[in-house]
Length: 397
Image (cartoon, rainbow, N blue to C red):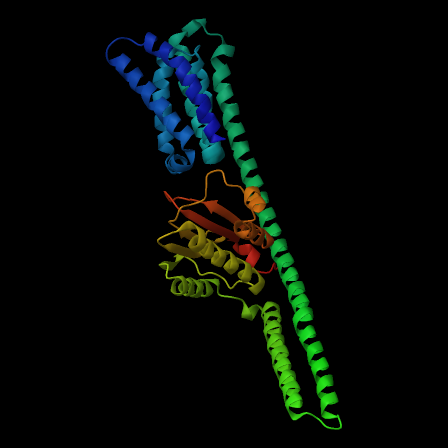
């Protein structure tokens, strides 16, 4: 919204600058008006092009907008209130309302209205009707009120969007936990149940061999060893699956993602010989993560490291993780060849490359957002994963 206001300012200044320069008196007045044109135009252009970078500076220092208003007053006195430059004055209280709320809108609307009244008085004098004199000052007051209302509306919309995102993330986590339980149940059926069925068949064979009139000692021994091995395998599978289920039902057994991520990075570096580093970031501790969610996050990070080793030809891999704001962020960066230009998930899916596709699907399953690209780096690839902290803790409502 603020960027669009500055875009309008740019157009109006460009249209009115020639009139302001032509009406200025030669000498010092001409130089002051020229300087005002350059400063206001360049300031508007910088904020229009890179609002994300310079907007916070304007937010912290209202004096910058006041200084801009004074420069604009020089152009108004030179060009006159009948030019398109007069409509630029409306942008100031509108911006103040968007950036500084109703207090800022009131201050800058009053200041801009006073400047416009002075300009009308000195330029037209008695030839100005009350309607002409009060039109633009009244428009400034309305613009300030509109800016303040828009600010409140956007804040409310942002809060509603954030609440919706949190709810969606929690629902996604609950769905992921349910899906993981269903997976463990399927694995128990497909592994432990089938192993126990094999044990039963082997035991029946052993009973038949042992009950024969002339039992073969070697055959009985082999069948007994088969039964023992099958029982041990079933016991190991049961312990592993039951341990996973117990960890998921008990919050005390949640996963420390940073510790596990550091261990996986070290293991990856030793196994592949590729220099890899891990560093925690952020200023706050990472809360314990539910095992089902942690498994997806760690699998994505591991897959990102493996993809870099297999396909990118990097000289190093850097893994970072920590809490930033209300997000848990995990980043895996390699300085390799990077992705081909205009690569899309659909192209990768058609070509049979499911690594990145799987990462996106895993991130979506737990309500996380994943970004794949160069990030802030000049080359290489960064896989950046972000999940709201609210999704990692159960709702207390």
